[in-house]
Image (cartoon, rainbow, N blue to C red):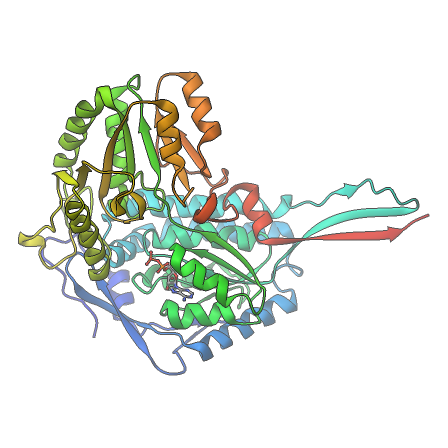
Length: 505
Ligand code: ADP
């Protein structure tokens, strides 16, 4: 049984989406749709209502083994990276981007239903960015070059080539289901790998739909496989499997530690894009309106469920009250509602009951430690009481040492803290185990460059927040990850370098 009755205030559910939800969802392995060997399934819910959406196949270790064998067989046959020319591979990836665009309304509804985000955001942001990612990497297939190396051994010619790593297990989270998958799949494909995608158990739907588009595009069977299932079963089996050459993971630091431990026996390559507690600093000379709006959306965008959420806000003391008032006004205007409702909200619910409890737990802890909420701080009830809705929340009276200022909350909660001195705020900003992103708002060029140079994070935003581009590398310092996605860096991340020596003398 699947959820086919939707609230009357929902936009019309597309017939393709309805049919998909009612279909017997299967794993995609070696170009075929297969039920899990155990027959196990798990439920996926609409976080806006708490209602059941669909049963997704729950892959176990034997399914993982089947998928790895299929991906391995395709890789070893060279059907993808050797028998097709780089240009042919690029065309297929480009074709996939076109299909993603053509199916944008369906993909957007699936992510909006599964994750809770407003469907217009999924349609206008997540899906086009995903398509763009594939387009960007379609262009890379013909540009993955080696080098000729001037070695100092006489009579020797030495050159390098870049080769695919092999079979890549890509494990992604639920905050941007399609987009996070695209960030990994596109460069892995361009570099010539075969892929097994493991979407998050909270949001399995768009990944399965994507497999249909791979079929329609005409990729060789086994290049792209999808295993839906739990992290502790399907994810863990993928990580431990000796036939997997590389794991690309986006998610929490605690799961990343487990993955590193579980990958030790096979010493497979692992790249990690993890969380953050990103500092966002507003100087008194900043364009006030720009900074207030920017800092508001730095945290509340996607409900704070972004690894780059600007969750530690440092405001120069002379403007502290002004910024706080401005942000509270902005936050009060944010319309929270069901992701699929006709009158589209700015924000939806958080993704699950578990996430709701986690975020509310942090809010309680913040209050218990002396923090004060100037706005928000409650679960939203009334007509939204069946979903997992939380008010956008701003805390003051926060010390850097408090749990809410140190740990990633992954919800719509920001800690606003005053600062007096630039050197002092720089030290405080860097005093975190994380280093994914950092930002500052100032009109002073010297301050901008000094902070850009000294803040320890993979991405620095000055007078802006949240920009990413398929061409620009993205990843974390410190405990925010290993490796860089996007740009040329992601091609390096999904390939090996081979050095070839030839005696010519
Ligand atoms: P979040 O904390 O944001 O829910 P997680 O880090 O828990 O994110 O999950 C991100 C992805 O990692 C999901 O696809 C999840 O199923 C997967 N995962 C969770 N635990 C493991 C594990 N032990 N091994 C491999 N993958 C896992």
